[in-house]
Length: 640
Image 1 (cartoon, rainbow, N blue to C red):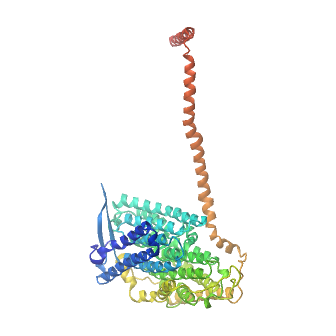
Image 2: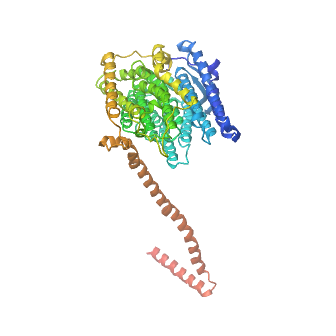
Image 3: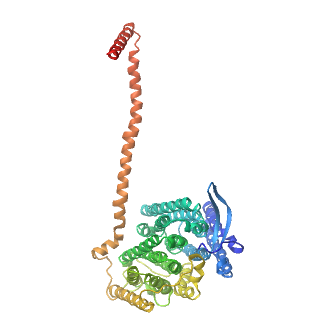
């Protein structure tokens, strides 16, 4: 916050720009290396990510040894923008928030790199894949380590580029290429919001460095801060797949499964939450914008849960789950400093259990000939024991099973949602509890349809499945993430994680919710149990049909993502195409027509003039007579 001193980075903190540079250089090397590097290039990518993690860990240890007021440090690499009235240094900002993200991105990212060695073993472009993974890590680290919104924006664009390259990695399949373009284009809408917010910062604060903005917030009026806060929210909606810019996230499952894990757990979709928390001082001074953040989060967490409850594609269920969980974080981020801390708490635990489940889904695909339709699974627990137990850890964590990670992190957001005055806490709190039950239902549905019940896959014939656990290179990262899914929440809760974040998010006394905390906890657990029980009744105690039933109107709508694509096509795409076609018509027949018409008229006019110059004296004499008559007529009219 603005009242905390910013120190010059020394020691490991002063070297954190290497954490960005090393994976970026590795990316360039892997892209330019010849085919001889195909056999070992992936290890270069893993080494680069590991070195960044070690740098982050050393810096984390350094910060732990400092007093809370000394834990914000900046390092300037060079003078970047030096214009009249605007100076921006390119540098890093190391503080508890940024280093938390660094550790999450590099640790989970390195595990995903390791998993990808085996997962992408037979892909001819594996070296290029690892180059793109390194680019993703480098861009996300630049985003969270930048000392200004402008530096953040470069990382912001970098993760957008990396996501496009990885989502459409198998671009020989047309729909995969389309999915990459869809994510890229929808994110450009959010990027425009960030650009507008930065323009307003320059106009009102004279700079875009975090320190400058925080120091000068008090000089701006509430309207200006609300304007900036709303456009920062637009940016976050695009990057974190929040309503109404969420339509790209389900299609992003077109990329290889490790990409899905990286996007959903450690990089791209968490960037919007980071932006909201990093801009917390703006939202404290602009309560209307803060309320908008919470409302968007509330809508999205409900939207994602409804969609997730109807999907049969296991990766799209997990994608909808991410949308919903990020919605919880966004709601919390709009509730002030205490909510911002809870948002980051849940973001970290979510990074572990969501990466765990995505890698588990990849292991299921690996053992089931790349099948993703859960209706073609069933009974896999006894064939894929390691996958089942590691996936189970992530599942129990996300539904908030007592004393596992999600129980500590998500339930704190639910408690914060019940805090405040008026009707707002009742609406926010009630919806978050009900969606917790819906989360338990669709995640139980996912686990039950994949691992329990009767075996619905073909055991013989050309399309027979032979499910089996993956190689150690795949299951070891899954096991490590499973351990984090089980215990990380308790570790963070009892080691003062929220206090650790206070130098950045600010200190706030925990406001008592409108209901006693034990009542909220028990009610939430009862609703969660009901969701699990309902899923058991529907998908374990009775046979699951291999073909999806027609379902209710809401179910059909949820399968179609609540018609978000239809809405976008009707409201934006088709009118946009019509406008473009109209512009083409104007260009072709008016602008080009005028130019071409002028070109055609001039030769005709020249030929017409040329006919007057025929060389006959009688013709010229007649021209003189006509001219004299016209001159006399003009003189006569003038005299009258």
